Image (cartoon, rainbow, N blue to C red; front, side):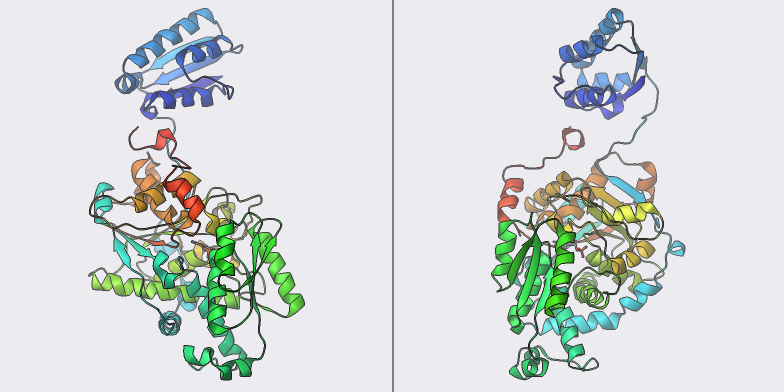
Length: 509
Ligand SMILES: Cc1ncc(COP(=O)(O)O)c(C=O)c1O
């Protein structure tokens, strides 16, 4: 066996012992000190060559500890003939160190993209129609587009802009924009008034209710969509049935019930809840208003994505007022991919010749879009399992096919990150640099910022760095898609430091 350790990659004693533990597959109980390492080395009974590259770097970082390591390794070599230690001073770093996995897909090259469907689906008039509807909702206000100039400076960027959907209609999330608009479109369709504008006032009127008769709306949710739909149904005075999976937290369930919806808890994960909701709706004659699509069920999920474009029209208006034509980079998080597709689709339709670079981010415990791209056959692929990420809004195992179609044809880079990246994003936004405004962000809302931070502070693959081309001319845009939607978990992360960044990826290493 030959193992290579690189001094350039080792910044702390813990890093050093992690590297040995991983390379030599040391047992879990390995004590992570030099004596314990010596004991493990003397126990080796197969030929093992340990190459320590860039040792002078290790001396610089660890000082006398590096010398003690060297002495110990020499001793182990003398006492165990199976071991050979080589101090190779020059060898380049064998691995790249970062806290995430990535795929470079369309790499910013427009000739590889196919924006035709996006251009159709996200025509400006659809977004305008959604915005016209949303503006009539009592209490509607544009959510802030927050600039973080000091963080941008720290990360060597021109600007970071966060559309803060935590402030949306006191709903703590962007989701209400999709569900409410889909109900609006459905009501128009049921009334045979597709080519007319219906006012919000008319939609809540007795006249409209009489014309429609009894209707019940239904959907599965991982929390935020269900709350948005329940809210819209309560405003319009229709019954609402929401299906959640068994891991959904009580605060999320309570927040849905608060708006009068009946909540059913389904055994299994989010995708099981989606199937159960569709089945029960069929049996009972309810209308499913789902944010995810499946073969034969595409119209309503498309309306939902078009509804989200209202957010993007606000954003562009806000950018214009700042003298910014468009962002250069868009980081967008994905669950089933509907929200990401609406953002990517919007900009691809608006700037087909010169779109921003799109980076789609998912949790590594539910990377269904990433895995579908990785498969390379253009098809949707599911991710099985508990999907037990802290990013509850992104804990989806089945991509939405209509959304995936937009993403595969237009997005550039796909990244999956561990929970600690989202947790760090929450802490950065919730405890900003002096002069930057505070943004309260939940797990799914903060992951784009956590990812941007990791990209700018981890040692990343040179090819990825080149394609990303993040520099002082970059204007980075992202959406904080939720605020503090789960107060108990929020406190665990922000106050108690749950899901800490592993030592090797910390900036103080
Ligand atoms: C807060 C939050 N952000 C992002 C998303 C991702 O949206 P989508 O499932 O459309 O990819 C969700 C979905 O529920 C969410 O709740």
